[in-house]
Length: 104
Image (tube, rainbow, N blue to C red):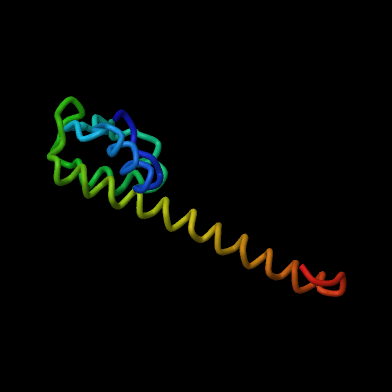
């Protein structure tokens, strides 16, 4: 995998496709710190703190990578969840205001 998706569910689905029909499978994530998910949802300041002692050519420890991935994906899921809730609320508002037109 070369980039994380904004949803953990999609990542788990892709990882699950690695091994099918009883065959063992494995996966490896190779992601750069300038990935769009990290830049949008982790922020430059957090990236600077997390990678403080690591040069750009070095690998970051897996535990830090997983933490950064989790934090970024949680942020993305919060943003998308808020957008879905706002859309649903707007839909309810429109349904209520157009109630004179009859039933749904």
